[in-house]
Amino acid sequence: MIRFFRFSGPLQFGILFLLIWLFRLPLFFTDAPLMWQDVKNLALGEKLAEGFLLYRDVIDSSAPFSASVYWFLHILFGHSLLALYIVSGLLLFAQAQAFKWICSSNDILSDKGDIPALVYVVVACSCFDFMSLSPAFISLTFILIALNSVFKQIKSQNNEGEIFATGLYLGLAYLSFAPTLIYLLLACTTFLLFTRTNLRHYLLFFTGFLFPILFCLTFFYVLDGYTEFVSQYLFQFPAVFDFKVGFDWKIFAFIAFPSVLLALVGIVRAVTYSRFIIYQVISQRIMFIWLLTTILIVTIFFKNLTTAFSLLIPFLAFFITHFFQLMKKKQLGGYLMLIFMVYNLRMLYSYTNIPYLNKSLINFNNQIVVEGAWNKKFEHKRVWVIGNELSLYINNSIATGYFDFNLSKSILAHPEFYVNVNHIYHTLSIDMPEVIIDKEGLLPAIMEKIPLLKNHYYMAEKGVYLTK
Image (cartoon, rainbow, N blue to C red):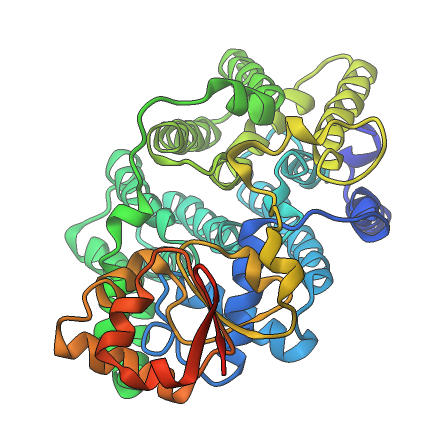
């Protein structure tokens, strides 16, 4: 396999495309898992497709560009998990080709060929976020393009277009997945250490980064959602980097150990290889700094480790490619690649209902949706859930704009303030739910302030309110 992908051509291009879909076959022919993130993305896309505006009408901290993708997909395909799988497969292939193009066009690897694209796809298979269409996965597209601009800037030193483009793509990545904000600092550090970038170029860089953000600010200002966009997304830094105590090394090792091990060997092999030119050595140092910083951020702040691991894919793939390209025994490299691929696919297929694969090994962080008793009682209803319970949105639609309970709690938990009562009344008047699930016990106090709700709903059971 390694020998075949050492060359680049239409045959390698087609085989890699087929491999991506072969890897995904179990998702189409078995009961594919439903992740909490998928439920949220599909529900959000459906709500936005109904004409509601993110932040102003739908209280949520989702990134605007990613939310727009889910809105567009819902318009085209409806409430379809299959559409997410298909689009994510196409995007993975595009990212793999972009990664190969970055490596070959910038001469940052010893050989040119399709090995970088193959390695990128195989490493990505260890993370289920690449099977679905997560915001982190979407943002990696812009991170890769920004990396290409960084390498071109190192080559040219004074290319104003490239440094502006770097900031622009990092801004788009931030609007796709907020934690990618860390790459803004990494890009600045790269320019500071490895280029002679002057103050004017840094201003261009930050102008490029702010350009898409200012466009969003203008867009939401025109639609009267400026304040909500600022408060629910731009200023949600605790939600972006959620510090946690301790780190589950068992989980991280299960996901990343083979990839990290091969990457470490690749780093050692690259350092001891004496035929690299200075520019290639600088490129390796840049990728190492970005890899190390991302690992530190992941281990300190992230709770969802599969999403966090997806941010490591380009940097791990870079050094794993070094490992396979610099191996003297190509036949041994082919066997190692096969073993590496089988391990990652075994972990990926653990999500599905294929026999003899233990799903309990992979359901860390409780990422797979577990349906409750209410899911059997209510289907195809407009539901308002007061609390953190997304499973009800699997077969139901969101009613009201109180989607993210952590953000909307400041309104719902304080009906004693007139502004909050007015907000709740206005929201319910334009989007009345058929079912209200009150997991937090907040609705009785709201009903006391809005008697209209008492006349419209009755309590069917504790915490469950239905229309009369």
